Image (cartoon, rainbow, N blue to C red; front, side, top):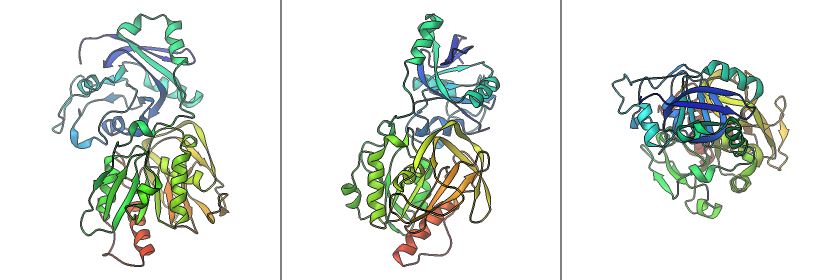
Length: 387
């Protein structure tokens, strides 16, 4: 790391944490959230779902393994700011191509290190996520009141539609691995590269559409299925994407959604969504599959959830037949999955691609593949892909 420079993290309730500048210096504002993963900081940094947020890593030592191009989940770092207790002075791993500090500087990501992240995490668990700012360089000279006012003037996450900031700008096609099942329409709301890899490995020609796409453009590729990715922002601000999804449901086209896609399926089926107190972010979240009773350890990154009845099959308020909650969080009983029983559609709130994270849930990509094959009335090979 470069020479020691002072920095301060300021929370909207006035709490201040003094530390050292890390990465780029200056000023950054965002929603302050914490990630409980013991590994996977590079995948978290390049996860578009973190757009608009300052991320606190609860693991104490960050940057030990450096950065490399192979593990990047998208084209850039998306976090608004980065917080750690102890930043590595130098990376030590044979796969490292650059230090985390250097990459943060190159991409203009303002960070702070040397603060008590345990105390900060406990505060967020009690009070909930809140607006915050990191100040260093010239902005460290602002008065406490001036810094706090800038934090208070920062944007709220509720009501924000961030998909346009993270989505691809034009159609991108990734061909299937092996024999093709057909064209899969993916609406990129903040997709991770690992997800694309898993879908192509299951035999889909993956057509990744920008979030600004229309149903007419999707229909033109004659999709065998539609997929909604993870992504940042408030699902209540994405009604246009809900409308596109309803076009697929109306036509009986198979659908699979993850994370933000789960929330949008919930809204398409007629349920509400709401903001969680501090969200689920990490690679150690226990989820129960209510059909099998199996418990999966999952990777998650979300601050909103679907409000749907958990203990009974209900009729879709939007007229799409019977719906059930398929998965629930064992930490707080949050809805972690939906299944439409009269439409070929399901979704989960977590990340089955799990980069980084456990691989308990990769079977969901096989389930999606099998649903598409069954809908077509055909068969293709034996078993699922191992990706």
